[in-house]
Length: 182
Image (cartoon, rainbow, N blue to C red):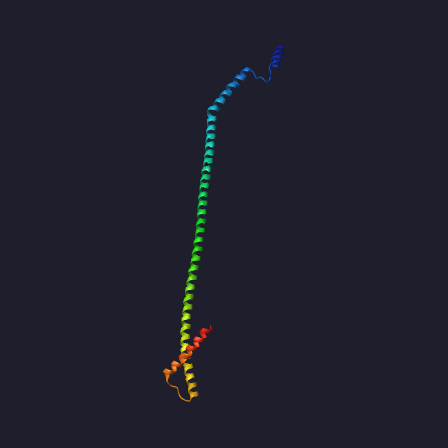
């Protein structure tokens, strides 16, 4: 029993938080082996996977930046084309307005020319009609005047040449008096 007591006392003197020396040595050797295997096998694989992931992310970012740059370039080209199309449309509208104004001016000039031609033709026709009416009127008035003079005098005045001269002189005198009063 004494031996048991000594053994119990020896056990009581040992701190339960501090492991015995041989266990500590075996634990340190096991930890070193696990750490060495971990360092040689797992860490390179983990670093390799992390490098690949980082490269993939950086490549994705570079691709996204390249795509964004390309999209920006395409947007600028689109804006330039749109501005050019607007400029072209404005130029075409301006040309159309100018052509329209020119066409209107040409049509007015043509209409004015046709109007002048119609007026000139009308004046010519009126002058011809007036002359024809004047001649017909002179003949009718001359015939009536000679018939009336013949009835007043009691003889026939059939000398046409003299009759025409007398009538023409009388009508010319009337026309001169009419123009003088205007």
